Structures are given as C-alpha cells and as structure tokens.
Length: 328
Length: 263
Ligand SMILES: Cc1cc2nc3c(=O)[nH]c(=O)nc-3n(C[C@H](O)[C@H](O)[C@H](O)COP(=O)(O)OP(=O)(O)OC[C@H]3O[C@@H](n4cnc5c(N)ncnc54)[C@H](O)[C@@H]3O)c2cc1C
Image 1 (cartoon, rainbow over the protein chains, first blue to last red):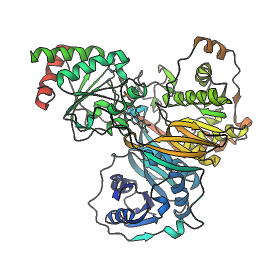
Image 2 (image 1 turned 30 degrees about the vertical axis):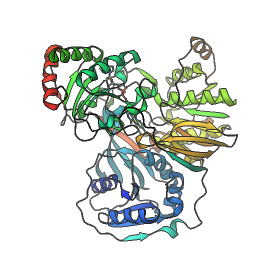
Image 3 (image 1 turned 90 degrees about the horizontal axis):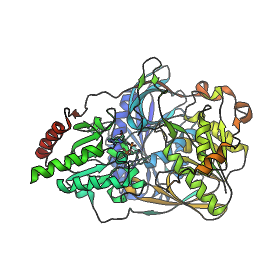
Image 4 (image 1 turned 90 degrees about the vertical axis):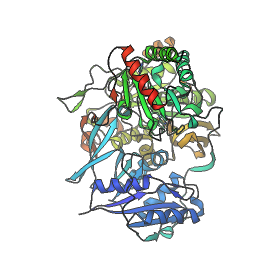
C-alpha cells in the first residue's frame, strides 16, 4: 500500500523555502508511489502566494489561513496540525530552528515514531523505513530503522536532497482553515512577543572574498593572532565557527553558519573546524575550500576541495611566513 | 525555582577519532574520552545561575550505566545540588522516545518548575526536550539563549533562529526548554566542589522505582533502532596535500594563487 506523506512548508514573506522542494525528492526516495500533500500555514496574500508556488509541484496543498498565524509559533501550529493530519501517516519537516521546535512534540501528539535529521533513505520493508543519519558531528553515519506502522514524524536535513522543481503537478489547493480552527486558536502556554534582528557589527564577512576561518582547534584566545596575521597577508578577513563566539573570543558577526552569517567568498580556509552541517550551511557560492585539521577523519574533508592534515598552531604561522616571503 | 536538568555523557568529538568496530556494527568505545555533552553543561550553568538569583534547587539527571555517575558528580561539583542516575538493564537500547518517557517518570516523581536539556547531544537528534515536553503536556521552547524569570509562574526567553536573529516569547511554568551554547559562560569546576561532590549520595532509579514496564522502554519499546555505523563515502573527498610541510605549503600557495587567495 502506498504511503501518504505530508510535507510542512516553510516560507518567509510570501516566498516558499527551498526545503519544500527537497521534501518532494525525499518523499520520492521514501516511497516512489507515495501521494504527497503540502501543508502551509500563515495568513493572507503571502500565504496564497506560497500555496500557488507549492501547488505547481505538489499533488495537493492544504492551507491554514489565519491572521493569528502571520508569525508562526510552533506550539500553536503543532496543535492545529494534530486536528487535520490523520494518525498513521508520514509527516516531513525540515530539520532547522522551526522544525526542531515543532516536530518532536508533534510525533508524541500523533502517537507516531520520531526520526530526526535524516539525510537519506533506503527502502521500506516489513513496516520499517531504513534511513541514514549522522552522529558525532558527521564523523560517522548510521543506518537506522524506523517502525512506521503507526506513522512517523521525520525531520529532513536541509540541503541533503536535491530540490525537485521539475515535476509539474498543479495540485488543488484545499482550504483546511475551518477544520484546523474548529474550537478556535488553541490555547498554549507560550506567547510570541517579538522578533529581534541580529545586531549589525563593524565587520561584514558576507562581502569578504577571502576568509580565514578558525574553529575550536585554535584552542586559546591568544592564538587568534596567527589567524589575523594570515588574513592580513592574504588580504582577507577572519571568520569563525560557533564555539569561538560562544567563548566570546570573537564577535558574533564573524560566525559562519546557519545561526551566523551566510558567506560567499572565493576562498575559504577552514582551520581547526570539524565541518558540522550547521557550519557548512553558511558557506555558499561554491568557494575554493581548504581544510586544515589534525584529525584525518574530520568531516570537513568531505566538504573541502583541498585538505591538509596538520596542527594549525604550527601550520598557520608557516603559511603566513611563506606568503610574506613571496610577496617581498 | 526547582530546576531539573537532563544531561548526557558523550565521547568528546574534538578529542577523539571515532572508529568503527567491525565486530559489533558499532563504534569502538573502549579508548574514547568521554565528557559531558557541551550543550548540557551550558544548561546546568544556567540552572545554577537561576538558583543563585532566585533560590530553589538544581537536580541533574542522566539515563546511563554506572559511568554516568562521573558526569553527575562533575555537574554537582560545579554547583548542582543533587544528581540522579537512572539506570536499568531494561533501559538499554532506548530510542529518543524511550529516554524521554523514562525522564518523564523521573520528573513526575517530584515537583519541578523548569526542565532544561541541551539543544542536542552526540547523535544530533535534538529531540529529548520536545518529546519530554509533549509527554508532560508542558510548553516547550528550543534553542534558547536567554532566560529571564519574571515571577513564579512566568519566564521570558529568547530563541536563536537562522542568521542569529532572535524570537522573544513569554512562557508559562512549568515548562521545558532546550538550551543553546553561548547562553552563559560555564564556570570551571572548583577543586573544592569536586571533593564535596565525591562525598554526596547519588540515588539510582530503575524501572521499579519509576513505575515503568520494561517492555515500554529499551530495545523492546524502541521504534527507531540503529542497525549499523559506517563512514561516509569518500567520493567527494578533498584532494589531500602530502609531503613535507614545506612541500605542502608550496603546493597550497600555488593553488591559492590560482583561486585568488594570494595575490
Ligand atoms: C541550532 C544550532 C545552530 C548552530 N549554528 C552554528 C553556526 O551557525 N555555525 C557553526 O560553526 N556552528 C553552529 N552550530 C554548532 C555545530 O553543531 C558545531 O558544534 C560547531 O560548528 C563545531 O565547531 P568547530 O568545528 O569549531 O568545533 P569542533 O567540532 O570541536 O571541531 C574542532 C576541530 O578542530 C580540530 N583540531 C583540534 N585541534 C587542532 C589543531 N591543533 N590543529 C588542527 N586541527 C585541530 C579537531 O580535529 C576538530 O575537527 C550550531 C548548532 C546548533 C544545534
């Protein structure tokens, strides 16, 4: 029996998120015969625009339209979804900040299995879905089996499936608002107050052509100097991974990644950075990536063009000296 | 404020090369250096800071084997008041739901106002807080990087979303929050604290203490099971530069020149 798969659609200011198309590919890998329904919540013209974009590629689009949903709160959306999504089916949600808020609790409320951060799928056999995940910040992959006989909520890592925009579906848009809102907006113990944009700092790494990026491998705040020296001779800027900002060694505006900046340099040096997907998510525009790491198994080597196995505390100053020599 | 913090002992990925164990379809665990999950340590620090300001207590809880004791004592040395080791043969092989249902039973044994977890641990699932909140029927917020106690019934929190932007929410207590790194600066463990924590009692709870049936947890109750560990295919792997450091640097500079990194 073919599965029924629901895909929760993320969108912003009337523009559908890429993950909406990635979910179509993911659904196709889970079960090529599955029927798939997009579910979009929001309000007004923005939501209509999103539903129109979705309907081009989805066989069916469900919309939940309410002024109260103009800024989506996962605690509210979860309860609305439980009112309309039948138990026993599959729900796909992107594994990012909204999905991480929404999805685990949704699985509990739907009495379904919870499978988090899938990057690929095998097939289904005996009511069990085979999936690929990563552990230890991407150092190893795991093959897991998820019992989907009571349905499942599955989060999909953004970027791990190609966005399937080719398929032309022109599915109908079904207004599910009254069904979802029956009994009114659900009461929840959490209220959205406001959205605060990240502060704009003095340096803008999104414009840099060369980034010398350091991670936890730099080991000590005092060692940052060698990174600044290298950036100087290369005519670039220093950026970093999240732990360096958490430690308050560098300003937040230098952080690359999904909770930091999205950069698009020509050259990116990843020095003592393991290559977690949240970090790599901030690297766009296909730069030339050089990774220097003392661990030959570090996942950054999967993402880099060129790799060096070395201790950055020795390697960085030597590289700086040599470039200086050439320039003289 | 009675605060419950869920913690996990994990292999330190900065310090370890994770290697596969062909015999067991697992990873080689014997030589791994373990420490507390980074996110959890921030959660414990946050709990201690809240207690220091508003009173109450901090209880750290882990579902583990005997080895979990060390992590609990580390966090008690930091300043947590109590540790609880949740350990039972029947818990082995639990999936996220299993762990969350065990933790739910521990939370419900006593009265708590606030439950904290780390955003994620070594398996990157980022699931326990959200599962636990829904099982308890409590409000939940993930990726929290600021907590302000408003009164006995309400807190205000910041969630960190894409691009480092923030969402601000008011949340009713009791609730569950998953804590993001950088929310505070975790203190070092004072030697005095280590000695004090070594002398404290750490109660151990099993299925019977928690009123759980063995078939609902562990391998038996798991809907998600890890079948196999493997190393990602080397297909798109970087070209590795080899030779003496000098040779490597020369090759690298040539490449950087051609790509605009050295002008
Ligand atoms: C919701 C969420 C959002 C996140 N957002 C971001 C984000 O925006 N940006 C981000 O970067 N992370 C982000 N993270 C964190 C991410 O998951 C990783 O924890 C983080 O990227 C790891 O940083 P790292 O590579 O510097 O440290 P580690 O993973 O600890 O890696 C350090 C590396 O340095 C190597 N090393 C150590 N010493 C040396 C040496 N002397 N010489 C050479 N190599 C050495 C080690 O082998 C290791 O590979 C986020 C996480 C979550 C849950």
